[in-house]
Image 1: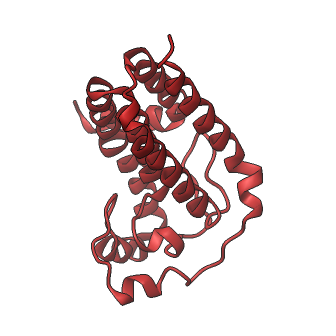
Image 2 (image 1 turned 180 degrees about the vertical axis):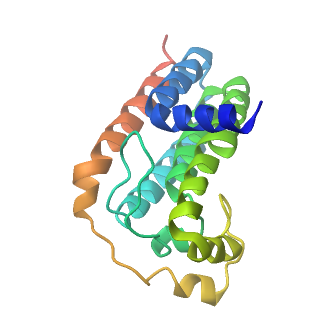
Image 3 (image 1 turned 30 degrees about the vertical axis):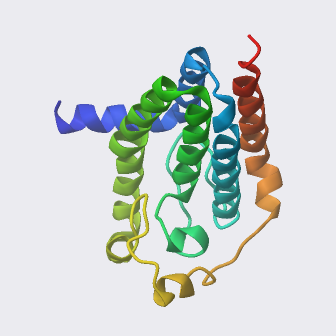
Amino acid sequence: MDNSTLSSLRAWAFKYRGGIWTALFVVILALARPVPSRLPAGIALVVVGQLLRGWGVGCIKRYRGEEVKADELATWGPYALVRNPLYVGNGLVGLGWGWISGNAATVVFLVAFWVLYGLLIVPHEEAFLRGKFGAQYEDYCSRVGRFFPKSLSRETFSHVRDGAYDASILLKSEIHSLWVHIAGTVLIVSRLWW
C-alpha cells in the first residue's frame, strides 16, 4: 500500500471513527456470552475508561468532527500522562465490554482496537499535529507515550495541572459518549438472559 492510499485510509477511518466504533460494538454484542464473574472487573474498566475520557475532554476545546483540528497542543491533565487519553478511555471501555462478553469478544476487540487506533486514527492525528505544532509536538512525543505513560515521575505529574479544565465541555460534547457507554454496557450485560 503506497503512502497516499494509506493516508486516505487513515483520513477515512478518522472521519468515520464513530460509525466504526458502533460496528465494533455490534460485533462484540453478537459475540457476547457474558460471564457473571467478570461483571465487576468489566464494569470497572468501562467506568474508568469513561472517567478518563471525561477528564481528557475537559482539557480540550474541540474534539468532535470529521477532520482533525486543534487550536492548541494540550499537554496537561491526562495529556501529561499519555498523548491519547480519549482513545485510551475508549480502549478501556471496549476492553471492559469484551471482558464481560468472554474471550472471543475480548480478542476481537483488542485486534480491532489496535488496527483502528494504533495503525489508522492515531497516526493520522499525529501527522496533523506534527505539521501544525512542529518541534513543540516532537518534544511532547519524546516525553509522553502514545497509549502508555513513559514515566510516572514527579516531573510528569507536575504537568498535569499546567492547563485549564472546563467541565462545561462535558455537557456539550461528552454526554453522548456517556449515554452510549451506559447503553452499551446494559445491552451486553442483558445478554445474560437472551
